[in-house]
Every structure is written in structure tokens, then in C-alpha cells.
Image (tube, rainbow, N blue to C red; front, side, top):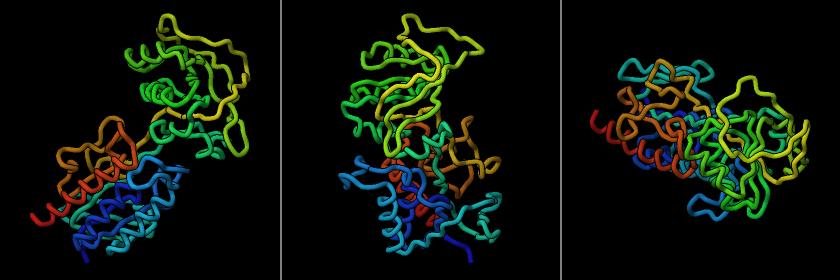
Length: 319
């Protein structure tokens, strides 16, 4: 048997695509991954998804899954371990090495935030530790928070947080930013932001919620050009700062290793979109964060899932 469409990924993009394809009687098969649900399941509370004033990330995913199943989607909580896109009929292999053939594919494998790999960070994720200021900044109104990182993303996160928080620290392990000049200027002019240079987070403090951070001083091996009039703060080894939120902004990694040498990726590993959610391979489409280095929101992922589903339906009708 050859499937009409296989969706690789069980987050908002993949499940939104599944809902549309199931309602079009295309009987989609979703490999949702193990564990399923994507990054949204790591978010405690979601308040910016239309239709829900407040909902747990895991609950939102469960509602999407149930809706997709209601219309006839088959969901398998397994990872795809191998793909073959070399022929008109594509082939995927699941964890049991089973071979499944399909006329079309939607890749919706998402992207993972890079973390500090601290036990305290893992314990407090969703309890004051976040990787998305746009998603969670609202919960930190009139609170003190810190952003960890020194690139454009970190500085943009810090500026976003100034709309809510009363104080924002930027903790950076170097003595200069890698961010663009304009982002640096905006940060340095913002009175709510204080920069802690040459420092790394050694531990996030608190048992049930974030209560502070303990920092360690970093002696830079290589010095870059230091921005003039930079804001500084008196530091010492193992300095402790009291705060209520930590936003880790050291980058994201698209979950696309499976597709190297199978389709075209950009220099950061994101899948290239050529037109209307189409990849470099005919019959293979993409949705969600694995092709989106900019927005990384559940609602934008869901929207691109719908786009990919409509394109698959059109592709199958034409072929």
C-alpha cells in the first residue's frame, strides 16, 4: 500500500496539516516522534494562541491530536529514522525498520532551543526558565529577569522583555556582543537593561520557581572590539543575583539532520522553501520551525502547516 501523504512531526505544524488533509479525505499518516508533541509540550502556559485565553502547552497539543484523529488521521508516536526521496514514490523507515511508501511528504520536525545543560535549568523549565520572550514575557510583568546570550536573538529578547519586566540583565560570557550594531545601540540606550560581561550562569537558584542565578566569571581568551560607553556592573566570582525569570537565548537548532543530502538546507540547517511550502524535491513540502529561523511561534507553525496541507492536496490532484 502506498500512502497519499506522510507527515513527519507531531507539533502544531504537523497536526494542523493533518487536520486539513484528513478533512480532504486523504487519510494522512503522522509520525509524531517519541516523545511526541514538539517544543510546545515544554511550555507550561500558553496565552497567545487564538481561541485560548490560557492553556497548558501539552493540553493544546492533545486537543490538536484529538481533532486530527476525529477526522481520520492516523498518529504513530515513533521517530522516522531514514528517508529516501530519490524516486517519485518516497520511502520512510520507522524505528522498527518498517518501510512505508508515500506519494507526498510534509516535513514538520521543528527546531530545538539550545540550552545551558544545567540540572537546575531543566528542573525549572516552565517555572521561570524559558527560551521565548515573545511567548512568556507577559508572565513577568514588573519582575526582574535575565537573558543569557550575546547575539541578535538575545538582544531582541531583552528588548521584548523591557515591555513587561522592571529590570532586565543580559548575561554574556564575552566582553563584546556578536549582535548587529543597531541591536547593540538599542540595548545600550535602554534604561531597563543592565549588562553583565564575561560571566556565565553556573546555577539557577530556586526549588519550585526561579529565585536567582549564581554566576561565574569568564576570563576571555580572545578580545573583540568593545562597544564604547558599555554598561558595566561590579562583578566577583560566584556572584549571586536575585531575579524571577531566566531566558536562554543562545540559539536554536532545526531538527533536520535526517534530511541532510536529501533536500536543500541553508547554512544553519533550516530547510529551504522554494515556493508555496515546496522543498527542493518534488512532492516534499515543509512546515513549521524546521524552516523558520525567525518567528518560532505555535500559531505561525500551525499556519504554515495549513499552507503545506493545501499544497499537498493540489499536488496530489495534479499528479
